Image 1 (cartoon, rainbow, N blue to C red):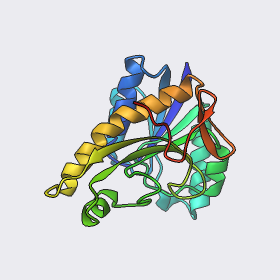
Image 2 (cartoon, rainbow, N blue to C red):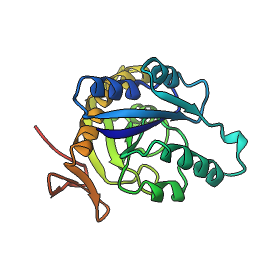
Image 3 (cartoon, helix red, strand yellow):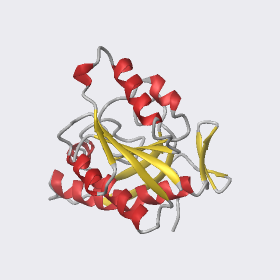
Image 4 (tube, rainbow, N blue to C red):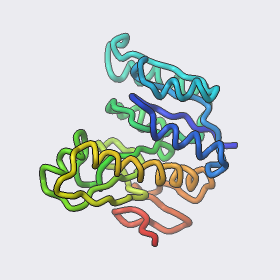
Length: 212
C-alpha cells in the first residue's frame, strides 16, 4: 500500500474526505501521518480518531522558514511517504521543501486557477461579480498556487450568495475531486513531467483534466 502524509492547518475537512476514501478503498493507500503548523487544528483530532500519527510544529520555535521546513521534512521523511498532500495547509513552503518532494506534492486551492491565487478567493469571486467559481487540484512548484493543474471543479455563484454559501459549495466539490486525484497518483496513472501534469500518458491542458 502506498503511504500518504497530509499537511493541514485547520478543520481538516479535506483530510476527512481522504481518510474516508482510503477506508472505503477508493484510494488504495494509507494516511500514515498528519502534520499541522497549529497545535489546535481540529484536523489533528480527526487523525487521532483514526489511529493515525498526529504532529504539530510551531513556527515560533524556529529561526526561519527554512529551519522550520528542514525540521518538517526530517519528520515527514521518517514515514517514507509516496505522496505528500497539502489539505488546507496555510504556510508558504520554502523552495527546499518543494524541491525535496518534487513531483510527489499535491495541493488543493479554492479557485479556478490561475484566477485568484492566494487568500480570500471566495470573497474575491463574489466582489467581482463572477457567475462561476471553483477549486483546483495541482502539483506544487515554487510559484504560489502556480503548479500544473490536474483537475478543476466549477460551482455557480448566485447574486445573493454569502461567502459561507460559496465556501460550502466549493468544499462539497473539493471532497469529491481531491480523493479522485490522489487515487490517480496512487494508481500510477498521474505524474508530473516537463512542468506539466500527465494522466494515462496524456499531457493535460492548462486547466487540467476535462471529463464528462
